[in-house]
Amino acid sequence: MPRKLVAGNWKMHGSLTDNAALLAGVVSGAQGVNCDIAVCVPFPYLSQVQQVLSGTPVRLGAQNLSEHAKGAYTGEVSAAMLKDFACAYVIVGHSERRSLYAESDAQVAAKFVAAQAAGITPILCLGESLQERESGVTEAVVARQLDAVLAVAGIAAFANAVIAYEPVWAIGTGLTATPEQAQAVHAFIRGRLAQHDSAIAANVVIQYGGSMKPGNAAELLSQPDIDGGLIGGAALVAEDFLAICRAA
Ligand code: PGA
Image 1: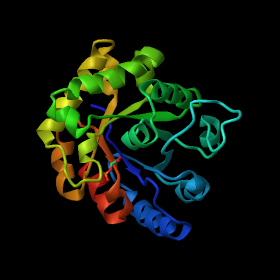
Image 2: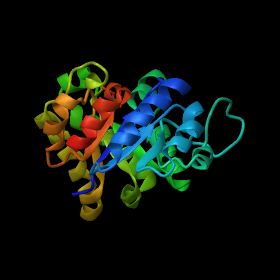
Image 3: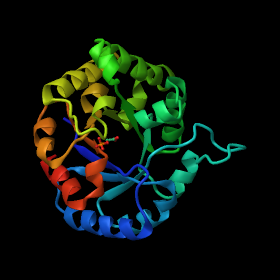
Image 4: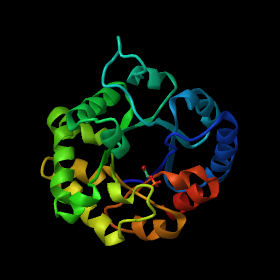
């Protein structure tokens, strides 16, 4: 079983002042917690957070990147730029990017490759909408999203990647997948990777995301194929985030 990873996704939240307070709480509580911990922060705060986290066990991540290396892409941020701030992780294909910014499976795959090429571990988000779940196509959707990356990056790339299963209907809604629902999709994802390479599949971290909170984290994290969490709302409160880390 891989070591668990709990990553905060701050989304578009924060200020210099708020970040300092939140990070002070997270860092002081992170000592001695028996899992990997990361925070994925908005681009303007990479420098601030890098400095605060330096010398601590908490790793830095970003929430998006460009699939391009450089050039005339106004407003975009490259993998090399993230590497300049010692980002260990970058989220790719978050459902908000896919739905609000029309990121395609192919674009997500290109971002995954760009992150890895710079030595940054991508956190690849997969997940179905409520309508897709109700129509019984959850596995087909997750398979399509995963296969798009496998086709471009290959199975070996998953030795240096994290997957986050995030049912869209559970993100920020207070609705959480039941441990059984989440476990079933996690096992499906791991099984699909195992068709290519069973050792890589066994070792890849597959996080659950979608309204994970202190009250439901332990049960979710006790499932055999749930290796951590990608935490939105609860990552903005140090005590809640740390409670989830302790549950892991
Ligand atoms: P949530 O967000 O924990 O607020 O549901 C999770 C995510 O979007 O990564």
